Image (cartoon, rainbow, N blue to C red; front, side, top):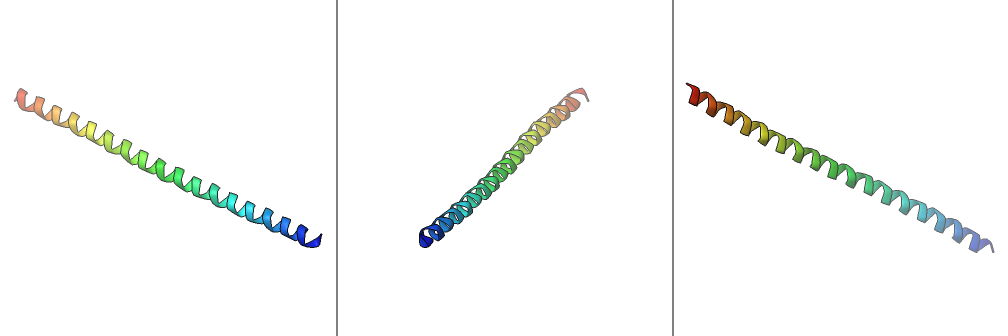
Length: 64
């Protein structure tokens, strides 16, 4: 009886550790995906702004 109780406690402890590790990994993965998405959005915004600046420069050249 005593060995079964100890085994049960060990199994509960191991399952808690595995659960915590999976939660930690998923949080890190979400953060990495968020950073990648944020960088991609910044890059897209910079491309749009660069195209707009080129258009302004072209219009300025036409006017002069």
